[in-house]
Length: 106
Length: 286
Image 1 (tube, each protein chain N blue to C red):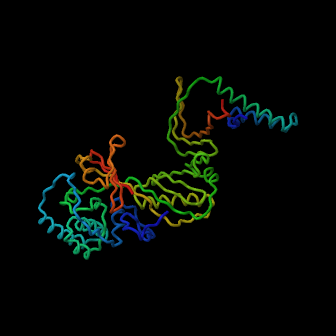
Image 2: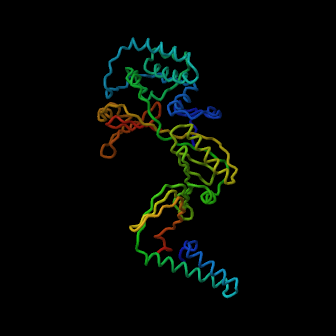
Image 3: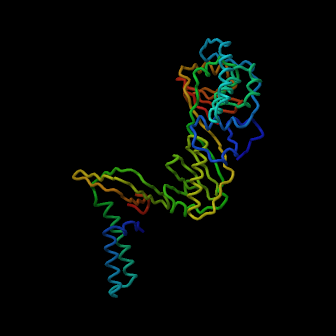
């Protein structure tokens, strides 16, 4: 059972919306939609662990932090995301992080 | 938590009633000394000679100082409330360093055991008084009982700046920025507050944590707030011969340079532990 962490991402949300539409139009069952999402969890966890090699650095000031159920949630302000190629600045970023080395990870 | 109020003269214990009044945030020295001086305490009467040869010799005109101090004392006592605190500090120092004047000082202002009496065993030749070495508070640990059972997971999920890892430690670790402190909050409702630089700040911080818990829906109260430990540090500004000190004060000292570079001096009266370093830096705790 992989982390369901990535369901609330642009990709994951698009998938959920599409599945909801299909359920509405009775083209698929809710059970099937659930199975699709579980498969999505496996696929995205595996892809990020195996197929992503690039590295991004970020720096900002910590507004709040939380650690509960082994999940870290941070809110940073005035953050700079730096990759070799480019720089992105944001006023506020929320980071939700799960343990990478647990049995759920790679 | 043992309440040893009756047992030993609690020089560093803050009386509860002082904090029922709203006090402005005081500087660490003020809070430290004024709180102590509100309660008349017995002076340590036994100044039997304890060898302080590890301190440098300071030659001063003792006669001159006595008259000066008497004069100062009179001036200070006529001052305003805030200055009275200072006068008590001075008088406390006087009574320490001039034991023959002890009675006069006692009657004049009520005694107080000032923190500069950390070298309280011997009438010192006013070295500390003239240089005015005042330890700075670095850390205060206090506890309070919120008097209600708490759901730690709910607190960790809804409060900001909280950590809860029940597998490792059965408490929520919460932090606030002002005063910069850390609290350990247990499911029993008991709480430990650490990191404050003064007693008043510690109490204020503990109240802030209690308010956070209260706002999360728990019927939190603020019972039995108690300062458990205070840590201070200072610099005597001259090197100290630790080997000499451990020879003359072996029943109080433990010095293992291969283990730890500081000498651990367990003072009996007041019951304080000092970490003394060759550089002249001293840490006081307990």
